Image (cartoon, rainbow, N blue to C red):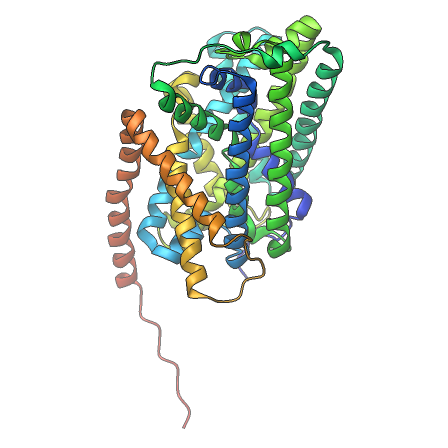
Length: 453
C-alpha cells in the first residue's frame, strides 16, 4: 500500500488568500502610531510605506523565480538547502520552529483574546484560555486536511480585505475638511537621532509586511505553482500595498499627526471618533478576524517546513508523516501549535512575545537572494524569470544589508538575542547528523539482486 502524500489542491485564489491572510495580521492596526513619532509629516510617512511596499514587491519577484524554479514543499528551506547545503537549511528551520513562526502564533492569539475581551470582559486568565482555544481550534482545522484549512483562509481573507476597504471608504466619506490634518506636522522623536529614528521606523513598517514569504512553503501543494505562485505574489503585494496606504491615509485624514503619534490603537481612535462605541466594537471584530486568518495561514504554511526537514532526515522522522485520511502533515502541525502554546503561557503578554522577528527574517531573505543569484549564474531553465535582473535583486540585497547593519548598530541587544537564537541550532544539528549516521549504520544492507547470465 502506497504511503499517503500531501495533495495538490491549491489554486490561484487559495494562493492569493494565503498571501493576504498571513501578511495582514495586527500590524496595520498597531504600528502606524508608533511609526508616526519618527517622521515630521504624513508625506514623509507615506514615502516610508511606499518604499517598504516597493522593497517587498522586489522581494516577491525574487521569490517568484525561486518558487517557480523549485516548486516544492518547504519554500525558503528548500532554496537554502539546494544552494548552501543542510547546515544553513537546518538553522533556518530550527529558528522558524523555536521562535520566528511560533511566537507570532502565540502573540496574535493573545491579541485576538484581548479584542474579544473588549466585547465580552474577561480576566487575564480567561484571555489566555481563549487564546489557547484559538490555537487548538486552528490546529484541529489544519489537522483535518488542506481543504478545511484553505477554506478558513479564503473566508477570513475576504472578510479582512472587505473590512479594511469598508473602514477606509466609509471613514473618508464621513470626514470633512481633511486637508489640515494631512498637512499637520510635529517634532520627531530624537532619542536615537534622525537616522536612528528612520531605521527604527522602517523596521516597524517592515514588521507590518512580514509573512508574504510563507506562501512558497506550500508550493508542493499547488496545482500549477509555476503560474500561480508568481501571480499570487504580484497581485497580493499590490493589493496589500493599496490597503496599507488607504488605512494610513484614513488615519491621518481623521487625526492630526500629533494625535496619531504614539497611539497603540490608532484604528480604534478613528473608529471611536467617527462612530462611537459601535464603531470600536466593529473594529474589534475585524481585528479578531484578521488575527484569526493570519494565524491559520501561519499554521498551514509553517508546518510544511518541519515536514520537509524531517523528510530530508534533519528532524524527527515522525514529523514527515502524512495522515492517511486527511493527507496533512499532522505531527508537524501538532508540534508547531504545541510549542506556540508553551510560548503563550511562558511569556504571558503580547509585549514579551513580540520581538525583532524582522532581524532574523532579513538574514534569511538575504541568504535566499544570494541563492537566487547563484541559481541564475548556474543557468538552467525556469518557467518564470524575475524582471529587472540584476539591478532590482541587487538593490533588494543592498537594502537588506543596510537594514541588518542598522539593527546591529541601533539595537545591538536585540540583534545579539536573535543571533543567540540561531546559535542554538548548531548543537542540535550535529546531534541530528550523528543520529542519522547511526541509523544508517544500523540499517540492514539490501539483499543483492540475482543477476541472470
